[in-house]
Image (cartoon, rainbow, N blue to C red; front, side):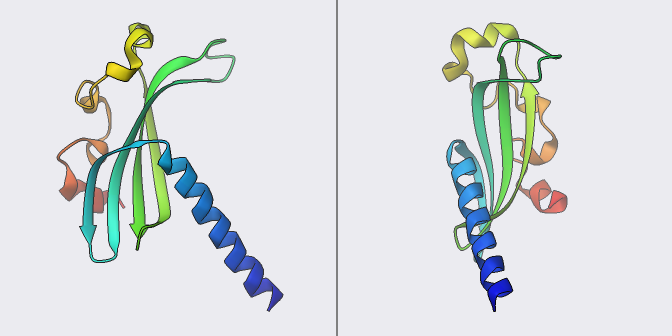
Length: 119
């Protein structure tokens, strides 16, 4: 019984961790089928990278494919790209379409049919 309880708590804490992680990004596309939904979420930020890459934070766009069941995050896959240094001055103004082609097709806008093929 103790193992089952520990497993349930581990799953609950994982779901909370994933929800908090996903909550810091903007929804750019969603498709629902019954209780399951697929989302593509986006975040543009200055990110600290390993010191051998850069001593300073660099501008990045991060997109996440999220699978939910009844609103609970079950799984996520993250992909990010480096943005040009000039992007630092206007991170909040970068449109979703500006670097859309740099992401894999399953994270691009208007590619709903490819989301399921990737998951």
